[in-house]
Amino acid sequence: MERGEEVVILEAGEGVASAVAEWGHVRLFSEWGELVDAAAARLLSPTGWEPPRSGYPTGSQWIAAYLKPLADLLGDRVRYGARVVGVSRRGRDRLVDADRGEQPFTVHVDSADGEYRLQARAVIDASGTWGLPNPAGADGLPALGERAASEVLTYRIPDFRNTVEFAGKHTIVIGSGHSAITAVLALARMARRDPATTATWVLRRATTANTFGGGDADELPARGALGIRAKELVDAGLVELVTAFRVDSISTDADRATIVAEDGRTLTADRVVVLTGFRPDLSFLSELRLELDSTLQAPTRIAAEVDPNVHSCGSVAATGAADLAHPEPGFYMVGAKSYGRAPTFLALTGYEQVRSVVAELAGDHEAARRVELVLPDTGVCGGAGLFDASGASLGGACCAPPAQVVQIGRAPASV
Image 1 (cartoon, helix red, strand yellow):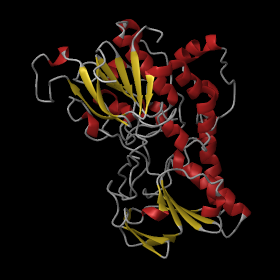
Image 2 (image 1 turned 90 degrees about the vertical axis):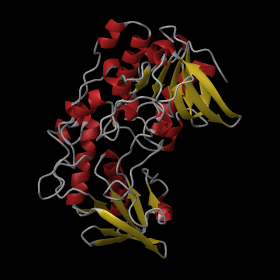
Image 3 (image 1 turned 180 degrees about the vertical axis):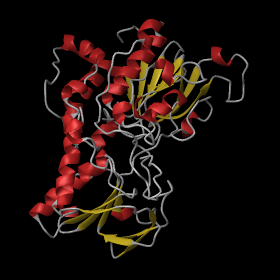
Image 4 (image 1 turned 120 degrees about the vertical axis):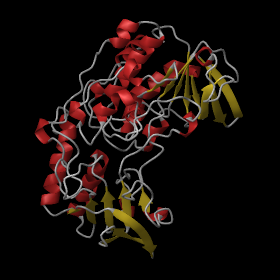
C-alpha cells in the first residue's frame, strides 16, 4: 500500500491468520519488537493503533494486537476462504516459451462461492509450510501403519491446558526442534505435578549435540531459555530422552500406540506428538518454471545459507528479491516456504523479504538490493548435529485486471 501497488491477498482460511490461530495457545520466543513489520506499523499508526512495547505474545495475542488490526485496515484487499489451487501464465502452460513473460499470471482459486481466476502481473507465494507437516517415518514418508494410527497421533503442539488428554498418561514426542522442546517442557511440568504423567522424547540422531540449542549464547533469549529448561528437566528425570530412534512402523491396540524403530526397539504410549518439521506445498505451482534446490526445495540462491546440514540459523543472512526470484519473471516465494524444508524461520526474515520484493516490483531496484536486517544468532555453531555414529550430519472475482500483485498465504512468517 505504501508504494501504491494494487494488491489482492488470498487467505485460504476463514479468518485472519488462520494458520497462526491453530497454534494460538503457543507462546512465541520472539518479542513484540521482532513481530511487527515497520511498514505495517506506519500504515496502522494513523488509526490510533500503538504497537505493544514488550513481552512475548502467544499466537492468539499476536493476532488480536497486530495481525487483525492490519487485516482490518487492508479491508477487502484480503479475501478469506480463497484457496489457490493453481498458478500459471495466461494461455501458456509450463512448456510454452513464446511471449511467456508478457502474459499475466492466472491464479486459480477455489472458494465457497465456486472457482474463479485472477490475473496479475506478479505473484508472491507466502503460503508457508503449515499445511504439510513431516511424518514420523524416518525416511520422510509415513511409517508403516502411521496413517491408520491417526487417532493417537498429532502433528501440532497440543494445547496442554486441556490436561484430560495427557494427565496420567504416557506421551511420546518425536522431533528435535523448538516445537518439540516446547511440547516436552509442557509435559515435564505436568509430570512434576502428577507422577502418573510420563513423557518420552525421541530423537532420530544418535547424539544430543545441539539438541538443547545455544543457551545463553542465543541472541533471542527466550529461544535459548527453551533449551536450557529442557536440559534441566531431562537431567531431573522428568522426561526420558531416547536417541537414534528412527521410526519404521506404528501400530495401535486398545487406543495405545506401539512405535517400532528400524533397529527393532519399541516404545508404547497413549499419545504420540510428531513434531518433525514441515515441507512446502509445490503442487499448485506445477505450471511455473521454478529453480529449487534438489535437497531443501528452497530457491537455489538461498539454499546454501539455510541448509541445516551446514548452518545454524545464526549463520543465515537476510534474503531479498534477487535471492528469491525464479526463472518465471514476477514470481517470488517468501516467508517460511522460501526456506523449503529448512527449519527456524523468523518473522523478521519474512518482513525483510517482502520489503525487498515489493521494492523490486515497484521499480526501486536500489531499495530491493539494500539489506535492512541482521538476524540474531542462535549461539549454535555448525550444522544440526551428528545423525549417526558414522558422523553424517542431520538435515533437521473473476478476471481482474493484471495490474496487481497477488499474495498467496494463510499466515505471515512463522517465528
